[in-house]
Image 1 (tube, helix red, strand yellow):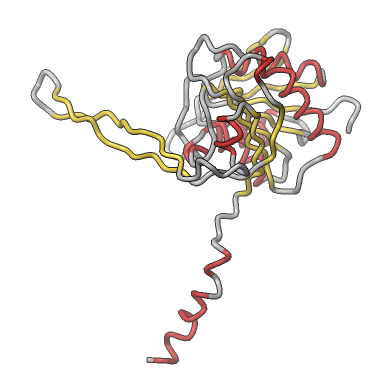
Image 2 (cartoon, rainbow, N blue to C red; image 1 turned 90 degrees about the vertical axis):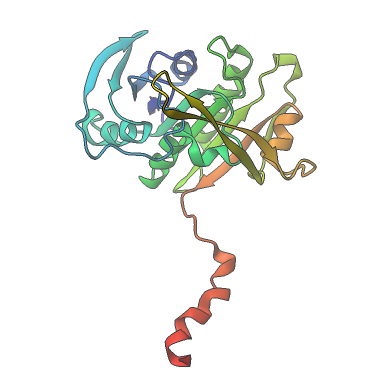
Length: 261
């Protein structure tokens, strides 16, 4: 572990969100070399989106003595522009969050918070995405903060596998109810979605996306959903390689398709 590591902080809820302000407080206990580059407005659900057909703008500011920049782009844009234009050296760690709401299970696919961490992993930079399972703007982050500091310090000391990031979700319960940290896998779950159709004053239809989260592995104790439901902090290692390796041999038949015709 470096004596004074450089840590980049970002999120998807916007640079003024309580979650990132709490994360800054924690990181200041670990190092005084901190730079924040975060969206200038909420970017939840943006996934790994990047800005290609518009300009990006940075606005420099100061957050509690920390050098910070609001960015007009997505969370992934923030990581890209930070490592390319803002920072003079490669960061030792990138932390994203603390997100207002869970990013466990299938939610990791849609999450801007986790996409920022995945982008860091693509660039070979250790990264952690932190989420609190409470979407309220008034969510209480205090019980989570000692664990966030512990996980950050552990990653800085021991490292993580190259091109891997950590998806950390924290149950929204009081400190005395948190049972500890559980390293686990992503649960198999889906969103059963519907579109609520409504009519505007001009008589035109518009739609609100609604739905419910369905965990298909409720009894599996090695999953993040089980951990959170039992008041553990879930830690899931995440990789950007989405190849289905089990299907490779099965699909080898396609390589011989021309010969068999």
